[in-house]
Length: 383
Image (tube, rainbow, N blue to C red):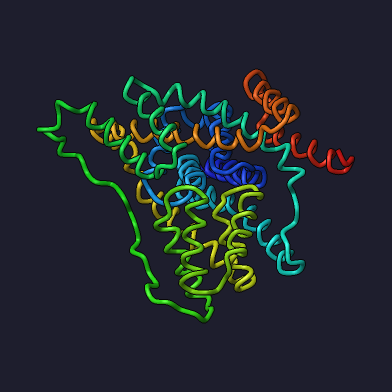
């Protein structure tokens, strides 16, 4: 790759992920849907199968899936500098916004209210996710077993079963079914590639605050965290309320709420906690601590993904995990839809957005920004 082309690709990576970081409301499912629309359909960086392989690989390691996808995509587009730039540019906007909100929280004792904007954004996000599910699902469901796995995971996830258990079980089931004839003569290239988990640290209770303990605690959480924001809530409460005694339950809930109402990764709840405990240095160290494992794990696993696809065993495992991921994504979409489509206006917004992403070439970012403007206008008019 020529120097001029490298610089062009790095600029493209930086601008795209910065924009995504400022506009990706709706959690990881929405971020992944927007990424798919941009890098597969519009920019042609890769095909659907390659995108799904990366998605399946991120589900096999701890950490935030959307952030890890940004790191993967940055690496594939612009090499090692792109790996760092893709992740940093996606995380940085949310970190800055959350820091401002944490400052307001300390100044005024409450988080700024943005419900009027989120009320109109959420139905649009549902439509974007639904469209991505349809496109990715057609690629992910390759046979009766992957289809059955996706449906089973959808149902079991809605019933409350652990997402990681469902992913692993679905992957193993599809791997075994598709390789029954190979069970006695396992491919010698079969290797255990996961989990890459850093051992937990800080075993004993510490009461006095210090930045080193803050950083190591978030490093531990980022190294072992699988699952949704509700799982993050459990980790934060266990460490910062019960073990260290630095925060109370309401502060933890407020941190999660700020992570949910801001664009970008939910794990920037760590930024909020870091700021209210240790100011700007605390916010920076907490953010680095919780996201650093993702950069390391992606750098380690990325070269193995093509090898996984070529192996009959690992390729089948990946197919099972991908199908299960679609089931989990569908479960999240149904849960979001139940909470977001609450009246004829929100249903109309969702249907209109679905038509836009399906029948036109309007960029999803502009659709989300348009919904935000509608919400803000309704707030100003008092309707």
